[in-house]
Length: 430
Image (cartoon, rainbow, N blue to C red; front, side, top):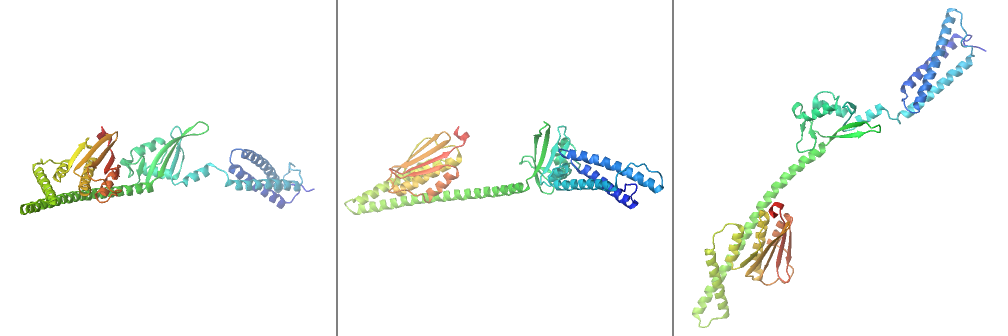
């Protein structure tokens, strides 16, 4: 049986080299294993193996040196060489197995470094602060943004708050006044800041500070504001066009009334001529004379009518000019836009009543009910023969009403009735 002392120097050297590499691998496993849970037992095992290998290697090395120098050797390793090789094989197999397990678990276990690497990959800037204000965990994006804000490294939560307060003075970062906690950085990106408190299971409260990239949302908001301004301009232009259309419609209606008045006067003059030339008066001539008298009264009233200003006064004067009596009940609203719509509605009903129903009287009722005000218009003319489809002036009136959030209803039976309901502003209602 060959012991370590009787074996060759080559075999002794190879065996000690194997022990040395096993010792190095054991140290690596001890340092690489995480200090938690079941891994603690492995670390204790590695520590025990390390001590045993170190003692064994020291004894073998001492014996190897003494043998080389020809000195007497204390037989501390009286074991056969094959048993020492078995020990080396068992230790090597154990350590290699641990190495394989460690490599296999490396991608499946979380460590401080893996968490740090993960948050560094986030597009948002994030940082966690301890109750005392010291930062606990912070990703690269937060460090980059803070360096732009304060031209220094982030160490404390108070530094971050101070940098956000003084960003307009010290850096090219601008706080957007119309956005909540949103900052525009020199590179054109917009970041929205938020902070929350997080309580961990042990009761410690950490502060989470986050910068979220809202550049796309900010740019869309700018485009939306630009489009809104364009729409406002278009709305103003449309209002001017609408007012021009209303003015043209009014002038057309007045011209139509004057033309009708002119025709009545012409028919009356012709009737007077026929009466003077003939001894008998026909019914047609008598009717023409009545229309002639009506036209004369209309001209007289128009000349005597006081020159009041205002849309309602002009409407009443125009109605009197064409011989239509207007009876009004209630007060028109003070809100200018609704007031104009009501006058437009009365004028449209006046024109249609005279043209289609031979009306001589117009009945207008305005009534306020809470936050709504209604206008009801009817006449004493002939009732419509069928359902009225809004066209021309009525269609334009309906568009004005709906643009202000109101409703318009046209009743044709038993008599023509126009009903408009408009919401009024709270101050105007009071």
